[in-house]
Image (cartoon, rainbow, N blue to C red; front, side, top):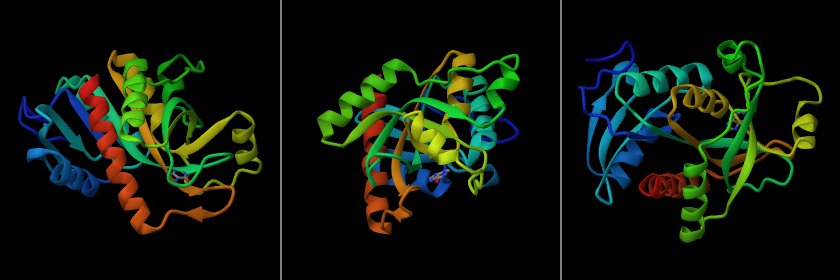
Length: 235
Ligand code: HPA
């Protein structure tokens, strides 16, 4: 068994998958945080690994960038490999009172994508995280001493967005982070009856044109991956 985009053998992917956008980040997480990790797929260089975290079998696989790419992998992971829990670990642009380096636990994800409308009769879906995962992530963050806030985020299809007034509109709705995947992942998980959560480090501030240094980014991503793994254990 394999899919058009995943060549893993049946049974080689755990029921819980961490999804960073970058496949090399997936490899890094597997090599640094999982015991006995083995590579299970590399089709199109979208690397996936399975190993153990504190005795629990967990996989980590790149999702690519954007809802379109993420939804392809998530759909195949759910429908073909039986994955029940998807935890995105990524970065976002911060707006309003978001602080560089802080972690956002995305409770809801609004979007300019038509991905969920397409599946929801052109209605507006309230794309939201699984509450159990959200709660587990919030408790794990408190335990690990990681500054994390449950937040509303916005998933855009357009990284280089020049729409006038867009940031102001998001700020006025209390949205704290902009990224490109959560709304699609949440909508898909709701339709498929599985759990999903996006855990995001604020890597840039969109109001102030501020950016995390490469070192801080690296460190932040490592902490976030650990948080995701702890959250997976509790779920
Ligand atoms: N926009 C969209 N996605 C992102 C950003 C951003 O500013 N930063 C990190 N991911």
